[in-house]
Image (cartoon, rainbow, N blue to C red; front, top):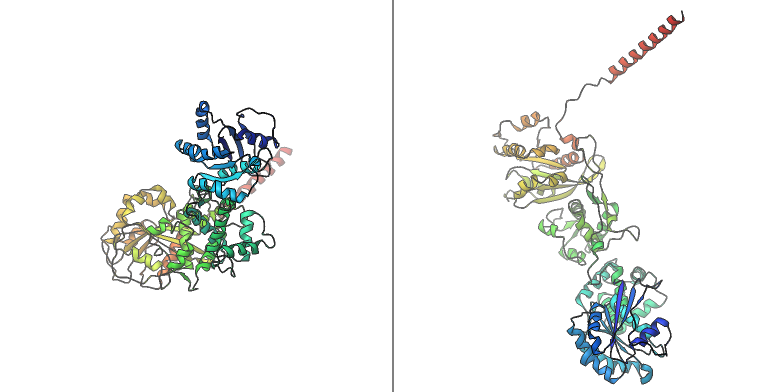
Length: 626
């Protein structure tokens, strides 16, 4: 919201511009003659009100002052256009409004009919309809209109308040007077607000949800009877609305349309700003991307609050209770967002995670997908937490409360587990060695004997249960044609927790690819690794390599390759082994010869030395005394 309002008071000579300013500032009518153009006045923010500084700029309509007038109009944020009789009223449409347009200014105009004490009160509504509304219809820049009297103090404060509101709560982004409709961007924003407030996603704001909406938006509860009044107003405006279950989206939008039509658009702005919308009806950058510092060698994961939020979302939108989110349910869930995250689309979501027999993502797959997203691109998770309405345990919590940062992983060779629940493993191997089939088996997909070459990098994520019942999320990634670029990128290697070297045990040329790969990229030696012989159900063949796989790994002091097949039920043991190695990286480095434990020998020697020294000191004392 704007924090500074600059009001340029314009109009013909003698319409009472200076008198309006003087009455507003002094809170009384100045009957003595005042100077033709008052000096600029700055009014500081009023305690207890919006934090807005207001500057009042008086102007002259004389031709010789036209240069100053142009300069001030171009500097202002709102124009108060004053008229007081028929002649000055005609000049509004014939001169002033076209003049503003000729200057290219794009600021709201508040139309003020001053000196109403001279024309009589009359019927205000009739005056508005017959006098002001036609000119407002012709010039959409006119934000609002009001009748005032500086002499009687009538609506003087109100006209300046309207000017301030035209800047701090502009009607233009919200409502189209010509079409008599809320603008599309406003409808989209209010639709998202409705979505977030409809906690049970039944399509209605029930009484409790309306009370919660009121408390969040206006920081105060609905008074007794107010909710019934709101329902009555909506029912009258939209007779077809059935409010027995609460307000549906149509009723909610109609209620806000009534606010706009009655000049209460500040109410709409209060709602939107409480839900982090800017004056351009986009969500605040700081709300979508709060500050998150991730130290080097650390990673990001979902916190318990984050997992609970995404689990609750899944359960709410699984309307048919089949344990999976179908296309319609996913579309409803992502309705308040720009759509699926781009990275999900690029990886052909939901093929990257666990699905049921119907092809719909399961709760296990849903949590795994968000775990992978948080690990690889935490900013995306933060952005979607904001879109989807995450609220932390405390009201002031930002979306970062849904994330946690792990301890930096600096020394992989040091014994012990790393503080991570999400780990990344690169699968490296020759073409047709079975890497893609391995990823399919990881996601419980049926075996497909047809070969599909991998062009783009492909990921798969699933949960793995470790010893002691601890669960972690394992991300397997085959690199495709980008393998050279990724292996030369140190940042990509630093993010990786484990390398799985996979070869086809039935293809004599397969293992040599791994040997050449390690020679070409010596930096891979700095990463923990596991060697895997795939297609163990096929006839094993001798590898055309200087050393056979078992001898090669033995020469490196590494464990022998694990022989597995995706057609075996024991394939899950490989994924457990990968997860265990990633979370306990020192076990996946070359083994070192353990030095014999000489602790007992050192203790015995120390004790003997101390005893001998004590005996020598006693002997010296006894001889010196003799």
